[in-house]
Image (cartoon, rainbow, N blue to C red; front, side):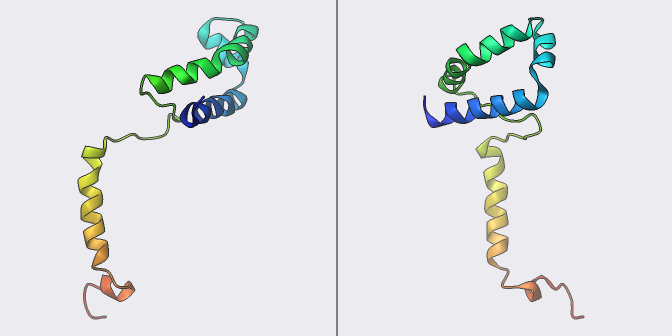
Length: 95
């Protein structure tokens, strides 16, 4: 298993511990033992599949942006930050 798949598995296990097997079983319409079996017997294979398909496992609150959409903004921010020498550079007028 590669590093990405290991990270995905770790995140899934963390969230499963937070949420619990019961809500997952109810959502999937299976028993808790089925969720447990999926976790112990198939999770590592599933995370390898996800990584191989070029997909990611991330928390739902994360925002994902395509690099070509965000890179121009980062470049502009870097250019403007390069002009700042300190707090005095941020002063708009004489105080």
